[in-house]
Image (cartoon, rainbow, N blue to C red; front, side, top):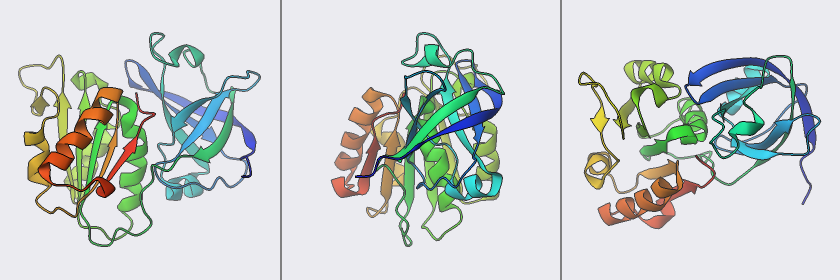
Amino acid sequence: MIRPREQILPVTSVRRATPSTRYVRVALDAPFRFRAGQAALIGLAGSDTRVPYSIATAPEEARKRGELEFLIKVEPSGRWGHHFDRLARGQTLGVRGPFGSFVLPERVGRRPLLFVAGGTGISPIRAMIMHAGRRPHGGMKLVYSARTPADFAYASELRALARRSDLVLKLHVTREAPGRWPGERGRIAPAHLAPFLQDRSTLCFVCGPAAMVADVPRMLTDIGIPGRSIKLEKWGS
């Protein structure tokens, strides 16, 4: 197997996504071919440390903009947050990839798509949704959970997409939420998923914390979705 070469890429922007995450964009100096949902190993140039982060950009966006975007944790208590807590525009990152088999198939026909994301697990899901929106499918549903309303990355973008397209969006807050919160409260349960799975041919994608990746597939199979139609990403956090 040919090992993907590493590119040293400049950081073009670092923007606040949530209290503990940042949207980080790097400029490409050469074509970077990948599939929606894949990841890359990234780390500060000059450091030997490389950690896997899903690419939040759809392939079409990367080609058009000449950039890749990552949703990066900066919370020191996070798994890799201490590596990126001082990241700023103008610095350089080593980016090696792509890697991973958690991808949106090139052809889904008219099968419905259900995406279940938790926390930063929205990164590859966002790339898949943007990619799927450009080709035929049987409708998209996104069930997305976070600790508080402030912890939803890409919330404004996803709400806007739901208003102007066939994306159905359900947001779940698992901890604190104001009384006026219009979304769901508590962890994702079978009752939240079942209404989206009337068609047993639905193709399901799950990415998030370890507990979610363990529990949601069992819920899906209990509802009647065959295991071969459930795709998992285990790097989400």
